[in-house]
Length: 141
Image (cartoon, rainbow, N blue to C red):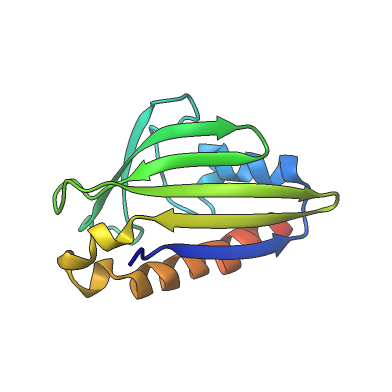
């Protein structure tokens, strides 16, 4: 069974504004994570810790695909816990003054052995909060 999370959220903003919020590290701090080494250059690696300062989970990623204003795809790993890689993909569908944001996180079955904090349900809750609440509120302000 493949445990993928898919979150769809329509936002009241054009695709170029959504893309900038999704890829500009200064804007990302406001709704996502503080990722100092983030770049959309292909194969660039980046890492960050969860918000709140606990520094319990180091997230590491590598940019895999970039189509400006349409798609951003990167690997997502927790190197201190597992060698397995998952894939996060953001797709944007331009609808004029609105944009449909589709986030897909694939490969979560490779992390389920790490416990509840790495379960599909846990990722589903986290991505729903990030995309449908934090990102939507930020982009529509």
